[in-house]
Every structure is written in structure tokens, then in C-alpha cells.
Amino acid sequence: MRPPLRAVAVLAATAVLITGCGSGDDWSRPHAKPSAVGTLGPGFVHPTTRPTPEATVTPQPGSWNGVHPSKHYRVVLLTTGDDAPTKAVVAAVGDWAEDEEVDLRTVVAKDDQDLVPSITQAIDMRPDLIVSAGNNLVDPLALVTASHLAQQFLVVGAELAEPTHNVTAVDWSGASFRGEGLGMSSTYDPASFTAERCADAIRAGVAAVLNDLTGIVVWLG
Image (cartoon, rainbow, N blue to C red; front, top):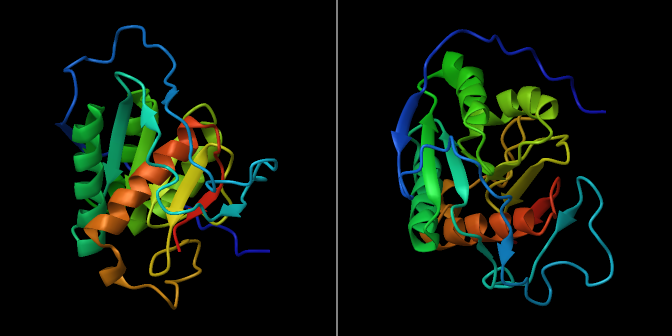
């Protein structure tokens, strides 16, 4: 049994909202359910066995490259912190969104008191996917995500200790922060957050979500 999650105070605060790549749609109009364009390559998951909740899958490198989001995919990048790993993930998400013509908006939590309000703000925008970048978001996400099961989340470079089916994570050797007082992994390595690794992470994670392979950890090795 893991230690119980400590309560996080919810204080009123306003996150910084930045409009990024996309069509300029204000997201108020009806929106078709997103779908995967293309298919997963061999070796992403076992061909006959669906991953169980909280399972870890180790896809073959590049097996996610054939999957793209459908047109007008709406994504909120939820981020906090200015450390090098977080910046690397943020840059990779921005590059991916531009390449895929994703409608990307960004919510930045300015400090610890702004974490939960920022998550709430991102949820209220009703995106197709919320992508999280920054270790300090892990514990607040653990508090909030289970109450919003219709909203899909993707955590890049970290993971929730006990995720619900709507929270998918992508990790690799050098990442895998889990929060809940568990401390930093002994193998944590900021240098592992390379541009190539982060680019693979966002593409592999989105490919999993678009194929309804959620609530799992995608391990890149």
C-alpha cells in the first residue's frame, strides 16, 4: 500500500493562458470526437492482449509514428516550472502540435498555490487531451483526475502512482517521477530529457490515447 496522498490546498489563483498553434477556433462550437488517423505499427502492444489498467507497455521504437490526430484536435498543455526537463517537454509538445496542425493552448501554473486551479482551468476548457509537463503537477493531478473521468490526461516524463483509466503516462529510464511522497527515482537523470526522447514521448503517448490504450504507462526504455 502506497502512502496516502497529502491534501493539497486549493487557493484561488489565475493561470496564465497562452494561445498557441491551431486554427484560432474559440472552442465554443460543437466538436466531433477525435480519432486516430493511421494505425499503430507492430510491437506497440501485444497483438492479442489488451493492457490491463496501470500496466506498463514497452512499444517497439517508432511503432507510434503511423498514428496522427484527426483534424482540429484540441490540446491543452498544462505546465509549471522552468527546469530544463520541463522546458524540453514543453518544446516537444509545441513542435508536435505545429507538425500535426493541432489546436494547442497552454495553461501555466505560476506557483504551488496555482497548481490545482490551473488544472481546473484546463479541464474547464474541455479539450480532447490535457498534456502535463512538470513534476510539481503530479500530486495535484492525482487529486483531481479521478473526479473528471471523461477528460483524458497525458503525463510526459512522470506518472501518477495510482492512475485512473483517463490518465496515461510516458516514461523512460531517467524519468518516472511519481509523487505521493515517494521521492525522486534513484535513476532520475535530467539529461535524459533530450529533444528526441521528448518528441518520441509525446507522439507515443498521443498514439496510445487515440487508440483507447489509456490508464497505462508507456515505457520508452
